Image 1 (cartoon, rainbow, N blue to C red):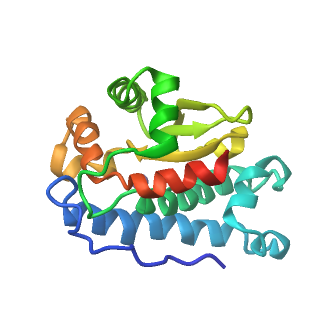
Image 2: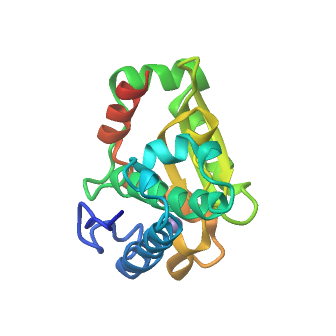
Amino acid sequence: MFTLTPLPYQYNALEPFIDGETMMFHHNKHHAVYIDNLNKALERYPEWQEKTIEEIIKNLNSIPENIRPAVANNGGGHLNHTFFWDIMTPVKGQKPEGELLETLISTFGSVEEFMTQFENAGLTRFGSGWAWLVVEESKSLKIISTANQDSPLSLGMTPILGVDVWEHAYYLKYQNRRVEYLKNFWNIVNFKQVEENFKQAH
Ligand code: MN
């Protein structure tokens, strides 16, 4: 059975960029419900309960067809949110460094251009979904967006940074101003964790 682990920081620790009430609902309600529904979907499939959430999402095509949509949505929701909490931090104003910085510049031209393209991926995702910085199978960096709770892992790509653009992630503070949420997101990105993800993935 999958369980909700506590956030690695207080609900209000990301203020003023993400408010405590949003974080509380997002973690304690939205994320918790994805986990409940994932557990329900896997109730009669003990062989899948033993897998990690990464193994499940990488192998969605092997999941029994009758529960596959529920596992994609709720398993993806569990995986994406677990990932998301870790790539944010109360240690504000971090910047990319080292090999990640070099690769961002060689891939996108500059950090500013990378940030613009990433924001744009989040801004142009119609409806609910995510924007991602991923490492492709070829080991190169790429910006993509996915709908709903679809994970880059199901597409053979490894996410190293992601931002939730479901309205539940920002509506209480930003209402319809997704662009402002995306611009403020940079203040709380845990680039130390993103660098770690990058090292693991390439
Ligand atoms: Mn969310």
